[in-house]
Amino acid sequence: MQVFKLFFKVTRSKIGIGILYTVIFFAICFPMVNASEEKVDFEDTSLSLYVRDEDQTEASKALIAELEKKHHITDRKLNNQELMDAMYYSLIDYSLVIPKGYAELLGSTDKEDLKKEIFEEFHLRDGYATAMMNVYLQEYIRNTRMSVAMGDDLMTAVKKSAEREEVNIEVVQDPEDEMFDENFTTKFAWFFRLLMYILIAVIMSMLGPILITMNGEEQRKRIQCSRTTVSSYVTQVFMGSAVLILVVWAIFLAGGALLYGGMYTGTNSWLAVLNSFIFALFVAMFTIFISTFKPSDVVMSMVAQVMGLGMAFLCGGFMPQSMLGEGVQTVTKILPGYWYERANDLLCGDQRGTHGDVFICFAVQGGFILFFLILTIIMSGRHKTVKVKK
Image 1 (tube, rainbow, N blue to C red):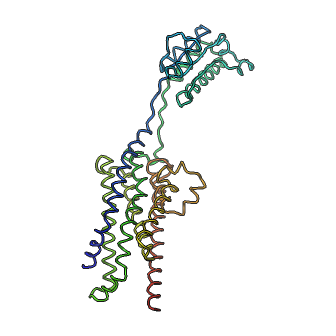
Image 2: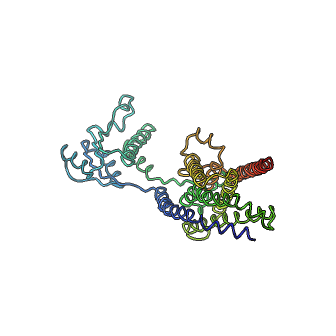
Image 3: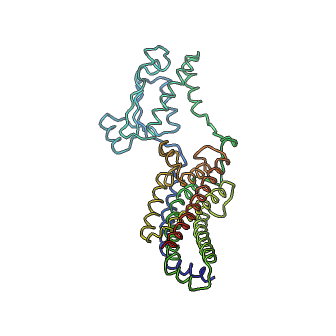
């Protein structure tokens, strides 16, 4: 096993770059993953409102009562300048004027009245909260007028509109169409999404230079002078490469388990683990193929960065594939990174599909591994032929 020992002796000289990438990855990954979880949850936002009721009817007071359930309405009487100052300093988020004749317009079904603006609203800063307030007021008016058109009196219609706003709707995913798994959260999916880039960077930056050194002229001459056969040499190099890939992959999976909070649970989590292992095998096979050209360490590092960053940006490594354009997704289907990220998105629910679709992604990645294995065999045979001719 002299070659096997030599492989790891060479590995020790290349381990620094792997440790550097690993530390950087976890230093960036943990904050990003935790931040991604914070963006998933939504909560109600209360606004500071200034409401001037010029109508002073039962209908206008009912609207103010509804607004008070979710928002804070200031009791102060402000003139226009004071109101602008309060909005400028963010003391007031939204100003609403209920004009004289509000009740009549609200209960009217006349076509001309339907075209008129009922409220006078104003806000300095656009945002989701102010946009939702506009939507709420429009829905409130629409629901009230619909009830009036169906024969209800105005106050009954106002009451029904308020009741509609309080209805809670539970969204349930169809288990036949979705692969929802509460154990494979969006937070955890982000870890596997980012893992694609770091697997490429670490494996190619470490394994590539090692293989180039092992296949160098000096090592070839040592084989000729020793009792080690070519087949034994290749077998031991392959075993060393396999052990290195398993160690690198296991280190990142252990970090993922730490982020997960323990051992992986649930079918989708383990399928994501299998997906990462298949992709690690592809990266190893691609590295072996590139090493047959005997590039320098600098060139190998450049290939790793171009391939890693390119696939991360184009295939969905830094964002869900649903955010990529259709043209980009169509073109990137020729890249294995697309199928790796598609499997992750299917498992976490970002894309609709079944477990059969996930296994198709595995099979396509396996096809890429086989393709580069064949190319490696062809290139190795070509190099041997060239040496014989010389």
